[in-house]
Image (cartoon, rainbow, N blue to C red; front, side):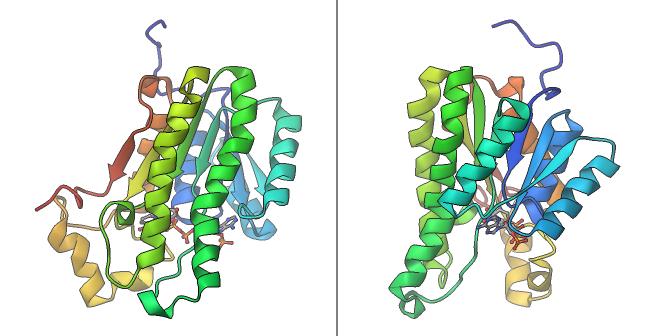
Length: 257
Ligand SMILES: NC(=O)c1ccc[n+]([C@@H]2O[C@H](COP(=O)([O-])OP(=O)(O)OC[C@H]3O[C@@H](n4cnc5c(N)ncnc54)[C@H](OP(=O)(O)O)[C@@H]3O)[C@@H](O)[C@H]2O)c1
C-alpha cells in the first residue's frame, strides 16, 4: 500500500454516524464532514436529525439526514438499504447512539437490563453486521464503536451501562478479527467526561464535576468538539494498520493514578 498523500482526507467517503442529532455524535459527524466525507446523520427524531444535517451543510460540507431508531432491527435495515441505494456504498460506520439508565444494582428490573443491553450493545453489533455485508463486498471499510471509560473502570450505582460498554469493547475486538481478512478495520473510541448539552447539569454537581478535575491528567472536562479528531483519524488512511484498538479520549482519566 502506497503512502497516502493526504492521510486524513476523507473526500468521497460515505459515512454513517448514529445518534448524531446532538452531543458527541454530532461533533464526530461534523469532523468527518469537514475532512471531506459525505455524512449520513443518523437520528431517531426527524426534526432534530434534519437540523443537524442542515448545520453541517450550512458549514459548507455535505450531509444527509437518515431518520431511524438504531435499536430497531427493521428500521435499521430499511435505513441502510436506503443509504446504499442513494450512494452505492458505505465506508465508515460510527456506532455512537446509546441510552443511559443509571440505577443501583437492585433497582433494575430484568426488562430494563435487557433493554439497555439491547440498545447499547446488541444494536451496534447488529448494525455493524448489516453494514459489514456491504463493506465485505467493497473489500474495505471502517467501523468505529463509541464505548466509555465505564467499559474499563466501574462507577458504583451504574452497573448495566458499564456491562454494555464493556461488551461493546469486546465486540470491537471480535469484529476486528472477523472482518480483518476483508480489509475492514474495527476500532473503538472511549470517551471520558465530556461537557455535552446533556451532561451540562452534571458539570454543576459538585461530586461529579470534580471527578475529571481531580482524577484526569489534564484536570478538566472534555469539550464536545475534542472527540472529532479521533473519529477522523480512525476513519482515515492514516489508521490503515490499526484494528481491534480502543482509543481513549479521556484527558488521561484512565491512566492517571
Ligand atoms: N458525554 C460523555 O461524557 C460520554 C462519556 C462516555 C461515553 N459516552 C458515549 O458517547 C456516545 C455519545 O454520548 P453523548 O453524551 O453525546 O450522548 P447524548 O447527548 O445522550 O446523545 C445520544 C444520541 O444518541 C441518540 N440515540 C439514543 N438512542 C437512540 C436510538 N435507539 N436510535 C437512534 N438514536 C439514538 C439520541 O437521540 P435523541 O436526541 O433522540 O435522544 C442522541 O442524539 C454514547 O455512546 C455515550 O455512551 C459519552
